[in-house]
Length: 324
Image 1 (cartoon, rainbow, N blue to C red):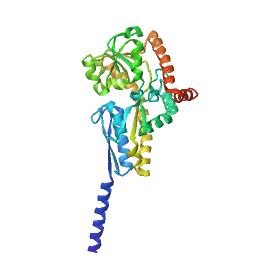
Image 2: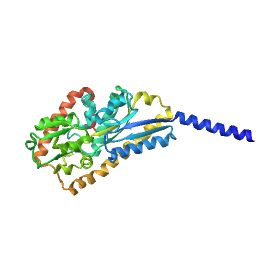
Image 3: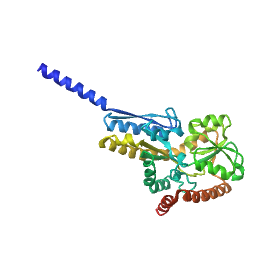
Image 4: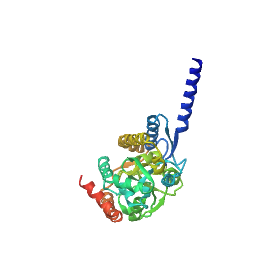
């Protein structure tokens, strides 16, 4: 009996040691603060994967650009410096216009329409990512985008000369059309850029305004609902391919759950973000008729520009979206 007990204990220790040796940790860089709902959703995704694999794959998030700066995250995952990461995909529209499909102004301005557009685009976007050594896991929309200013703005003419924070090609193009001066600023640097006057305006969701405490530097938010950009979580293809089939399924199933819960959270939080801006002294309002008309004109120009740049794939996406 003693010999059997010794054998059993040795076997258990060997099994535990083997399991520990097989356990894998994936560090997940993200650009936004730990308190941002995208970051919180990614933490839940990581826990889902860790629990679902019995600890064989642990995903540990690193928010607020602490592991890699926002504009370095996608490249880090592509090259294997990080096995998984989250990135505002439209920030890479300069690499491939398809990555900017969610930021075409005034094309899909509600959560329902944003979902329809993403459904039309997702397969082609996943293929584009695959060609860059990336595996699409899930995506979550931000709340609708609005303009932040430090003065009252009633038309595009009122925007001329303003230093405007740009975060992708669409925002840079809007700045150009409106006569503003675009400045590329990552989310983690926005508060400082506002405080020091590097920028004095930006377009983003209520979430980013709350994260950056925009009311400390700016006075007006215009709820123009320009578009709903998405953060995409993707994995390094080599790292993902190396997983066994059961682990891959857990990752993708947890990704599907994160997409659903993240979208619902984004929608649920939208009104609360705008209330927080107002409670902290910002004027929160709809755009004037003139501003709405000016912005619609920009949107028409930019939609045609995007379709031309994205070619047949882009046209197929827009046609499929409009046919729904």
